[in-house]
Length: 199
Image (tube, rainbow, N blue to C red; front, side, top):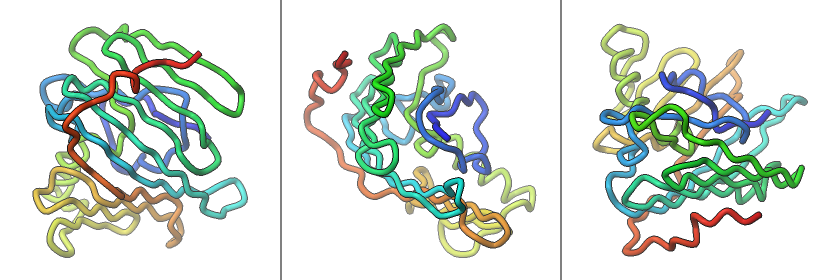
């Protein structure tokens, strides 16, 4: 299964997905790529994803994302079954490369100026809004500071409750999907060569 899932409305429960093929979108204003937990700053983010393979065992991938002040980004898959895949958003098009097939894909943004891609649902501030809404409706409960749970999922935020640090989804009491934030750093400069699509 591959991902970069197409969502305009985001749901935490569907964080249990796959890797590279479609694009995740966020509406401008509330959850643009510019403020998809990145702010209007150059940032470097690393996160890991464990998901159930066809044999039921968990397989792990690591992703590295660089954002510039405009919300443009490059995401590389640096380990796991899709190592070598990458995705770039340069403000006009999404460029995707699938290493296993040597396949390049260009996806123009036809959704208009109100929508921008984000590299992964995990990086969307929409998650925090949805989880807090679910808590108010009794669907999730706060188990400790900045941690929300129900029978099948656990979502842990940073202290400001703006960025997901860890998300776990269970099926039949076994973890079948887990996302973990490994590193977030602000960058003084953004290398424009990161947005170069290598064909």
